[in-house]
Length: 296
Image (tube, rainbow, N blue to C red):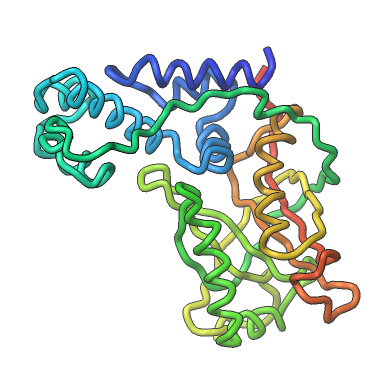
């Protein structure tokens, strides 16, 4: 069974269980991948976490039942998993900007969240340049923010993080301590509860003490792993953002691997020539993804 078919089964399962228990772990099993890989893939490819997708679909179905079907607010709330009409009303207003009662009166047109339907979306037919690397555990030092893939927030917050600290001279202060790999952009500490992860502008920890790094720098560890290291060339950050999506939408579906659940990272190596601007079509970046064999 191919990846697209398995993912379609997972999406169908979620859609069919909006009134019951739409179990994300069960959906991951149907997609034949780990819970971590399923959540990460879902967020990168669809720009929303599985839990948030289910929440929005439930609210959209409830909105239809209330506006078109004439259901009572409390009945719709309980049907789609809310414990009380008060908590349901808060969630409804955050999603649509109006209350369920206002929706029932037809005061505004609602922008509903449609179900995800796969056509030939995940094909795995792109030629991607990569190599397999074994790397022992190592420590990093850097500055950190927390962000999320949902609603493409990371596509804005991470470039803004680089830009802000680049202008302040913080990136250069970290980069002068680069190891052999270069400057790193590390994604780690994924929290499935609030669907966020930490992102650090960092370098491999060497002999330079933490006190020599910019304020608010911290040390964190990356465990031993096998990586698929992908290379791309093009203006930053557009090229590396496209590479991330292609890895999940094209490479993983056609490979025998899934995400191993440990930190992944971008590598910004020494450029040739050294002063090559990051907007150059020849600017080189790598993305290292920890991998493990898929379960049969």
